[in-house]
Image 1 (cartoon, helix red, strand yellow):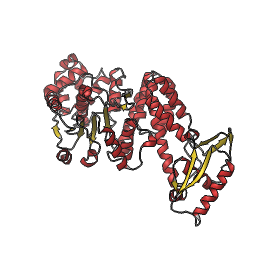
Image 2 (cartoon, one colour):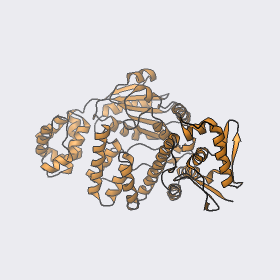
Image 3 (cartoon, one colour):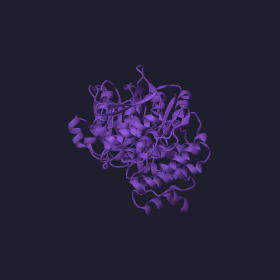
Image 4 (cartoon, helix red, strand yellow):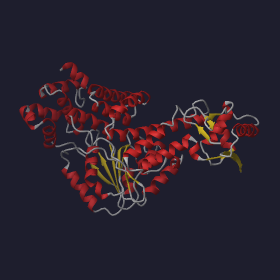
Length: 503
């Protein structure tokens, strides 16, 4: 008799398509605890923790044996078995008979194939297995933690699927699902970017701007941070009416051994302004490298650290045939298991193979990079110690770290190169204004342009903010813009809403 188990929703089991009554909730929780690790032994102590937590019954071992006996009775087939092993129990079953393991298997195949049509089909099959929250009818501390972890896996799979479909131009088809997901995940920047892109491509530009402003405000109010560089890039592209192809994550490449080659760099700046002496210094460093080098680029907020690093990383990417990894440490802590798990998935490790302990995850990450020539960008690091655990270790690799701090401990421990960024010179700042606003518009209001440069204090981010305002309201004279900037105070660009109200 054919048997199937479902945990991606309420726990259920069926034999030849007919659902089976699995008994009371505690009995079902015992089955769930074993199915989560199908074909692997779960000790009696682990079962107790997973089902009862800190309050096991007085005769716990006898209770477990009773539950397992009843489960064997209601599911009488040779296609599965609950076997007693030394110190615990194991559910012996074909893994594809459990929807959780089928989900992970389909994801592994989806991330390994190269054809987008095959990827779409596999992702749709995997995501279609979900009937609701995992183990929805059961409750224990362990099950709640596992439920949250599985929900993270589900969201990651959905976001990967969205990226592929957006590359294929299926933005209209994705919109209903994206709008539903953003309600449950209002601070997920990747999801927000997908929604904004789909809305813009569907001709719903006003809604796209609304959703960008919404997540920008939520990130500021709830987390005290700005949107990520990629999300800000998307916003700038919308303001400038530029193509979005460079913003979309690039398709994963596969090397000759079947390993994933990450291609994670954010979109390059179409025309990079200034920083020529810094670029020459970086190129000299690259030409002379022999071992795994580390470069720390330090400077104040808004000085253009990320822009410089991303631009140079694109220029040298061919030097690193095993790929480029980008990680925004402002959004994800370097010492977080979620961060390292994401890096391992980037390198093609299936979710089910990733260890739960952070130290083991870091060990696997370093082992995978030990023989590779990779370029790693760790953006906006705050502390030396956790950042050090993510550095590339193989000769020929390169790690670029940006930080508002000088990370002296990291520089000392790794013999890293330290590059300190200074504000733009007056000439570089005027060059940026000419590029963004047009030389004729800047020349026509030269004095106002000088005031914009003065207001920005030579910070590229400040210049980008004011030029974005000027581009959004082309009828606004630069002199009027400088007056409003002066009223808002040095270093504080007026909001789009304030400009719209006063324009």
